[in-house]
Amino acid sequence: MTMAPTAVDVPSGLPAAISTPAPGDPRLSRLSLNQKTVDRWGVREVVHGCLRAGIPAVGLWREPVAAFGTARTARLVRDAGLRVSSYCRAGFLTGHDSTAALDDNRRAIDEAAEIGAACLVMVLGGLPEGSRDLAGARARAAEALALLVPHAQERGVRLALEPLHPMFCADRAVLSTLGQALDLAERFPVETVGVVLDAYHIWWDPQVDAQIRRAGPRIALFQACDWVLPLPADALLGRGMVGDGHIDVRALREQADAAGYAGDIEVEVFNADVWAADGDATVATLLRRHVQHVV
Image: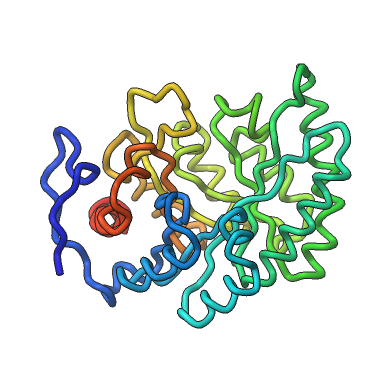
């Protein structure tokens, strides 16, 4: 059944929505729904939502998985026949005392292994409060990552370093470019440490084409969304549905594929209006935008 367009589906100046792809449409074969896109849905709701829409993969977040139970989540996803494209998120390794962070990251690795996630997304963290020592923060994150790699290897979990747009350098991620992420990832075995290509964070980089080619087998995940203006007061919520903004997501996806990536295309949208919308309507919009602007 084709759903009617919603408020998040027809932005000003863009053509009317196309019909919603039905379950089984081959164009959806690599699509994954990141749980954050439907932020009000818990684990059960997002799994059932994927099944209703014919989405074959899901990206899960630690907090809702903890609330539902890791073992229950693993069983539910397995019984539903869904792939887990990613587990979000671990990292935040830039503090001066890394003991608690390392323990939490080892727990995240164990959880990712239990639910069968293709990768554990790592956001390395920003500057400690009051600090201006960016080089020191990057060095501490690299040292902590090296301590986590043996546990990830033991559990068969791939760590996926995610560079974030430079506006998040102070508070969230001292890795600001794909090149920086690769410089760090390449210190470790390719099967254990890869990188995330998040369209929102890498599209602006004048070196992105060359760095995607360089990434090759290091690409652990491709995430799709759009850069919309004006940015909200909380820039973290400035992502739009693909097609609403300024990113040529298809071109980035094609470059990733040309570099050898054949994994899931995960839609991750942080946006208050999208979060407030009906979840099934948001998913239907996502399906239409995927076939219009990504595949």
